[in-house]
Amino acid sequence: MNWLNRVWWSSILLSLGVAIAVTVSWEPDRQIGPLVAKWAKEPSTFIELDGMQAHIRDTGPRNDPVPIVLLHGMASSLHTWEGWQHDLQATRRVISVDLPGFGLTGPSPQGEYHIDSYTRFLLRLLDSLGVKRVMLVGNALGGEVAWQTAILAPERVRKLVLIDSDGYAQSSLSMPIAFQIASARSWRWISERILPRAVVESSVRSVFGDPGKVTPDKVQRYFELALRVGNRRSLFQRMDQAQWGASAHMIRRVQQPTLVLWGLKDGMVSPANGPQFCRDIPHCTLVTFPELGHIPQEEDPQGTLKAASPFLAR
Image (cartoon, rainbow, N blue to C red; front, side):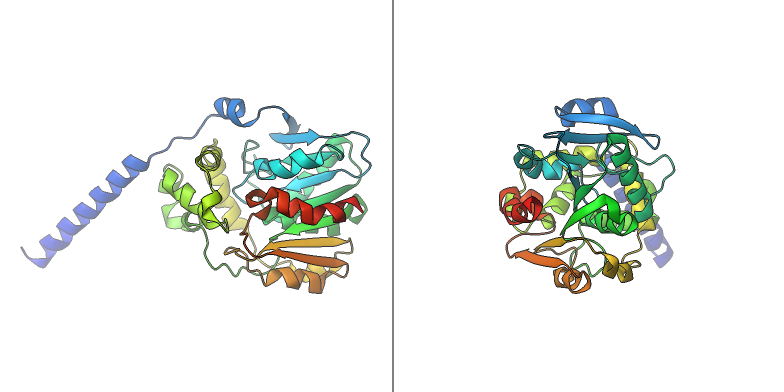
């Protein structure tokens, strides 16, 4: 067999292998109805906003003058805050939301996932709920939405809690495989149609300091919500529109009292960014968690909330 024949057969076998892999891993979009029935149980509600049905949970006493708003990270959902919301709602009004492109809220009709789109979405959400002033708590992407909102509308934000927050230039040590796939533009057509559950499990385990805390139910939730109609394309669009660190110079404008929480086993956003926030923000306190990863509020809700509660109560 000459070399041309060998190349030809190698190409055929490679194409066949890819076709088999795609067929085995093919995952159709999940329709919103069954997902709502499973993942939007009480106290979930939906509010029409910017052409979307935004999934929110608004719990606790309505006479709270400064409610707490919880903002999740990229490819996550309001479920990451269930531990915090459950404990805080006894005495505080607590609002969590699926940001556009993620969870049950799903894609933005305009395909807009820049940070300023998220800040405008958040302010319109507060207006719709009749909330004038809040404490913002954000993890990762949600952290950047929080501090940029505090700069854009300082009269609306009383305090900030930033948890493994985005803001500085990316210095990722171990980006989850799902995000690596989302970043590979040449694979987009295939990536919108396949999603092995093992990839989701690997990605979730990689953002926990202790992967043993990642239960099958947790993996299933991330898996199913990632398959919500439009969410895979939204993740790709968010990755394309992200400008990591482009607004870092603005962080010094934050004047609100700020608590920074950081999991020191975070492989996505460098733990060195925690002290940097407190160097740039004048009224800032840093608390670290040596055994936690990128989403410490989900990995250890009680421990992280215990650290934040005195700050939120003052």
